[in-house]
Length: 176
Image (cartoon, rainbow, N blue to C red; front, side, top):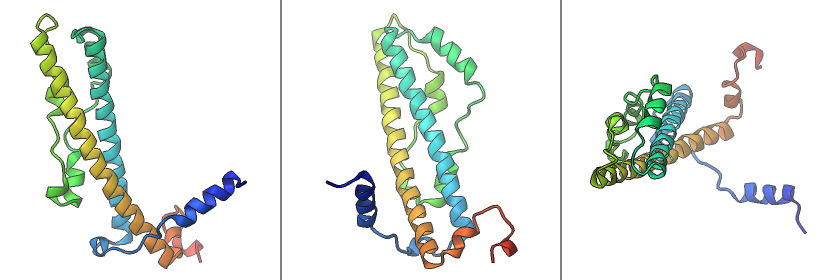
């Protein structure tokens, strides 16, 4: 019988060891770390909006199409949240063909359906559902890119383990 520790060790040993990629060769270590941070920030924004869209779909379903009261409260609570600049982070570091299209989240968030008009409610539900699918595809692209940058960092650290120490917030002359 194997222990959990042995299972983790076996799984870790079976993982592929990341190798350097030409895709990242032009980036300095600092730029690669910054790219990874930027991608992580973007993934957080996308995940947040995806959860908001899902919550809005749930509200519409629970309220039979009338989410105006609760939506008004949500809008007030989330007034500081903005959509907009985040996507530029990914466009700057990924080929444009690899970036799935994103919906107009601000417009979709502001849109209200007439609860007395089932067609209006269905149209909003359909558009929210499609937006959730688009956000999921975009998030998957972010995860692929994050995995690539993480793999490149690991490969560089394996080549020269001292590079990992440069990420620490201590003066470089104290590292030696």
